[in-house]
Image 1 (cartoon, rainbow, N blue to C red):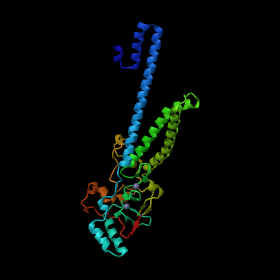
Image 2 (cartoon, helix red, strand yellow; image 1 turned 45 degrees about the vertical axis):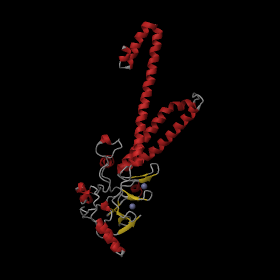
Image 3 (cartoon, rainbow, N blue to C red; image 1 turned 60 degrees about the vertical axis):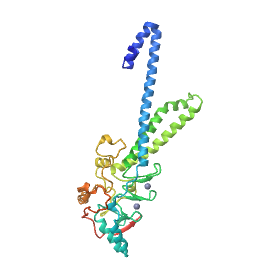
Image 4 (cartoon, rainbow, N blue to C red; image 1 turned 30 degrees about the vertical axis):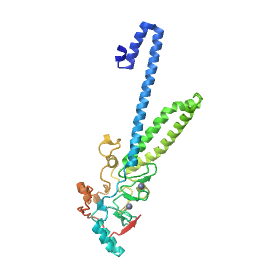
Length: 333
Ligand SMILES: [Zn+2]
Ligand SMILES: [Zn+2]
């Protein structure tokens, strides 16, 4: 009984040795102890491998699921043309007058970015004034808040609603691949020196090693690039084409320092950074600006509760004081 009640492997070995010594003699005792330790080591190693593997696999599957099935966030009703605005807009026959209607609507919204021409960004297909960092996705056929890119690997738009999940998916995929490669490496070496017995296992070892390494290297570059984007607070689209503000294009327009940039994506609670739950700051309709002057004029940042998305179509949002009324509207694809 004492054998089963010992807690550590070492103590078990000593107990086993003592029992063996009494019953079988010293040689058998040493051999039995050695065999037991080897079996236990293999068993513990197998348990550790299985544990790490399943943690990697579960996190990989969870983040992949969240990346795929989290619907892209779209602009709230405040950015859509209300019934009365739409009537006013359609009643106007001259394009300039129509643009003026949109300018008046834009004054009530926290929009600081412009089209390349300096015009306010308007999506003709969704009939919305585009919030900062929002773009129309031609695959999803909707405007997506803080759109990063449309990803064919997850068959979904990567944007405000699932950017954290996408980053975690990349990191857990890398972890999964490197774990597979590391555990198969020993057998891969055996394969090269010809110690691996002939059979289907040979193919499995080769396949696992190459696929795991190939995906790891590809993901490493993609993940590294996105780490850089997060540190700079840019989306992939913004990295290719700098966001245009009233004062002109500025690649670092949303860069408010690495710590705050990270918190925008992952939230303030660090223990939740690695769990695929929603912790990103804000609601995706506006983002703090590097230029604090513009931000101080942002009524939404002064009172976020005011901008909780409501479906009543009301327009109680404050005016944005510093918008240039002379700016022109341009329909943007
Ligand atoms: Zn759109
Ligand atoms: Zn899309």
